[in-house]
Length: 141
Image (cartoon, rainbow, N blue to C red; front, side):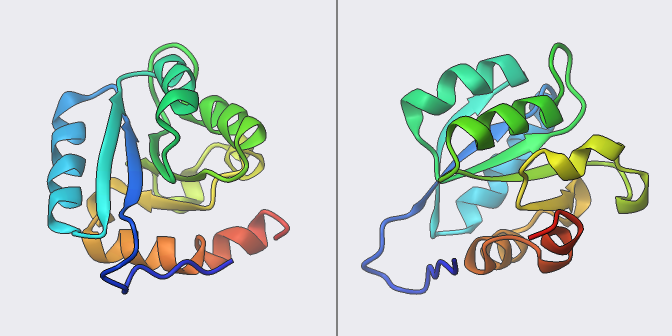
């Protein structure tokens, strides 16, 4: 499914940021402020908190850190994408793609972005294409 955000009449993409590091949440929030088609609806500091919030705030897009205390972002992504398949989850971390944990490809995530690559342009591309095609191929999509 391709979702476009070019129309001024369309509702903004509702985004939840999940990261245990406040500096990254601040940076991601700043990216969203520059991306007019995206609206921050929630922030979570852990995978557990994200799982609790997602049902209440119903984001369209979740930016999920991989490494957090408690359950990992991979586990949280698996639970969210299983319980809410309409929600798009993009994993974000400092891993190089080739160093990602092996279970990342079974999580249901639509794409992976290195934290340094997170930008309004990257978010628009991921959202409009429904994820990363190379990522989907690795996930059997």
